[in-house]
Image (cartoon, rainbow, N blue to C red; front, side, top):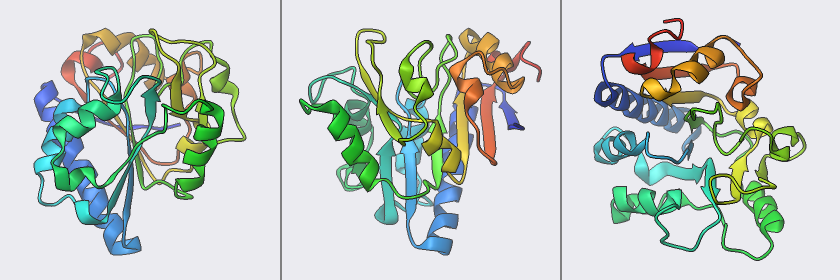
Length: 226
């Protein structure tokens, strides 16, 4: 499936472009539907993007609902939690938009089902990253969560880098109005080449959506077909 690719000189420029794209998508969603349903992935790569987004007047925070693409099962405030960093990067007013994944419940499968109930039928924009092993969201290599096709939110069965994860599944990604990939750095050159080549041997290569935009820096795209 074709991915519109936009290459920038460095990570800072790419992060700003990604933040601007999100803010623009938000304004468009407000104009068309009166609210903006955004899902953000974790990891360190989007921190600069999220920080910039928090400063943008164009971003319609008062009408936004910020969902999580994935989250580690860990205590509240733990540094490995994606939510911890979202809270640190956003002002108190903007934090009101957050819709955290409930990963502290004893019954995680039930919690995943409950999170799905509160997801909109179609997310306006889903931000995804890309790991060196080709994972995206917490759709990680070899885990049965990759085969979930009847739920939009699932749990990884095994531990990945020390933690089980809650994650949006392929059906949730497929129904989003738009996917934004933000991919930075030379460590992801190989999986990025596979993603752009439609290689389904990596989890990221199995994402399907009619409108996907890739924003990356030159370090990531060199040798990846761009």
